Length: 340
Image (cartoon, rainbow, N blue to C red; front, side):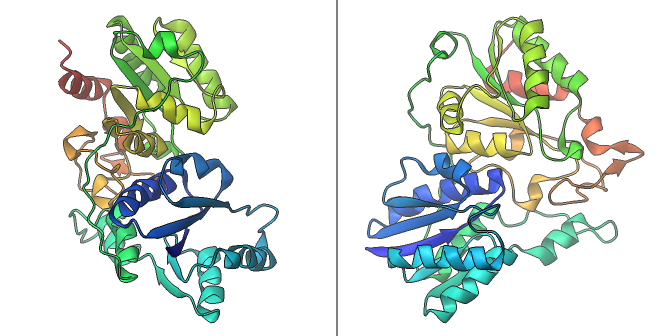
């Protein structure tokens, strides 16, 4: 067996995309073992991938600072790998790369495509075109290690057990739609008023709506929606990440911001209506296997102004995300699920 160390420490959506790539990679290369190095929370993304071992990275305590990374390096050496695929290309991973190269490992590093992303997001002389998908950039690292990889870029439905307490909801004959209404940056988040309109519409149809999120603030918001509307259920704080993936696998559709909810849907083979504000799918972060026609966005010459959505994106004095209407999202959902 050829053993490859793969590093990607964050963020949640990016790590989920790595899992999509590794699943196909292992199908195509039955003589390889993968040692995946990432944060403990993300281990659930890699469940079921053959010949993959997950090694926990703890940046806050055990692997903090340079001395912690040296400790991580010493932990990884006994696996006997001879190749490293750095799918992060940040300060931590590059420091590890130096240690591995010094020890004689073959190391290849992710090309993030910063120049073309800068051209896509700048205000003047914007080069507005589709850039290479992030999943293909990940695959390029393995190609550089001399492993041919051909990604299918289509959704494959995953078969998983229904978690305890969700059977009445997920086993019903109603359409089942998940909603991931939040994101790290506010310039990527549809207003709560508009999301409320979407949830009410779906609830009135008799659709089973499952709300996802994280943290106390999002838990409070989703539980208020669940109290207000019938057939609406919040799972925030009630299930482990692996169980949330189990739930997503039984959905007919996900609605998500440009955030991890979209990538978790991709991992489970579920189509996603994705909502874009300051960012744009042209930057390469559309969920694996998702379709461009399922993206909800308003075209404007100022968009996109950032890759990650961490900056205000004003379009004629209005935030780009605020130009998206609830009706635009509902129309996409109706077309996707053949609602009248």
